[in-house]
Length: 489
Image (cartoon, rainbow, N blue to C red):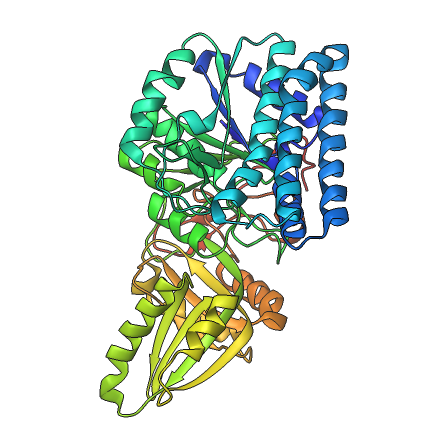
């Protein structure tokens, strides 16, 4: 059971998490937690200020975090908080303060040092959650994630060493979970020689999947603040439908193309062992959520979700003769990869090739190093809007309907990549809302109730779900399944 930052952001939220875990004791839960609230963001800001010598700004952020954690600990534990604060929490803040002072005084901010600083968020939250569970009457074992999640030495984006990690988890977590609730932090790990690493932002999901695979769990639950995977990005358009299920490939594609509900690497450990991942809302624990697994209900060619990847640049390359385009494309792909610029889509055209990539500082450096014979143009303020669903690339009508729905929206590029599960359009940032709204209206006029469930918002603004006839068309009206507490319309 993994709980995200918003699910453990306060004493009240942690008490609610304890009640959810208590209701599932028969399943021998192992609990992975993210840092509380926006702690990781604050730590990142503090370390950057300290590295620039802005000691006052760094101290303000540090003090804000210290007060926040002490305050929520006292609310959570009452008089018994004193012991935890003195023995477990205060020493971590003293160590963190010392690191920030070292940076202010000229210590170089290396990727490894940044990982050490960012790791304090999960160290602190897991200690508080474990103490809260104990106080609520749960027998609890706290495990330091750095002792069991073994990674390579690529700081800030470390790759787990799977079999070594699984061996550690079997010898520790699996044994402790037989008679107690194990609590550990997500996002963090360590190299073979004990240097702290992090798995990249959102890496707590990956930790949960690693732990689930390592202990042979029957299910991996990702508890967050949304009802599951939705038919559209809620940051852009409210009122989407909840997907009942996705297969692993669809989930990986939705995550890769911008959905924040799941880390892009989460499915890999679970997929190898066929363990289902269930995304659930910690604020509405009675909802079934979305199940990601090998037995997803779907019909090939059905669009399941519209994902949005923000902060994308579209790079247009022009070269003659056309015969060298293939080598240019391959060479540039390698160049992007070496400079850690992620490629999200590629499209060839008559005089060149287009790439949709992360809009980052590294991109400008890569383009400066291109051969002068290659013409370039960059559209920076772009968003990659993607349709995701098994087999949609082999359904010609999907592309036709999408282009018709987008109408006069300016499309910087169209990419179908190497996946059969997605079609992407790069559009101007200013047009993302209207693009998503038009696509959602086109593809979710009559969603199949075996695949989709209404959310309270979709029930208020969208017609009732219709029953599938089995041939891709829909007829009649099926009752909308509403969560407990929702008003029937």
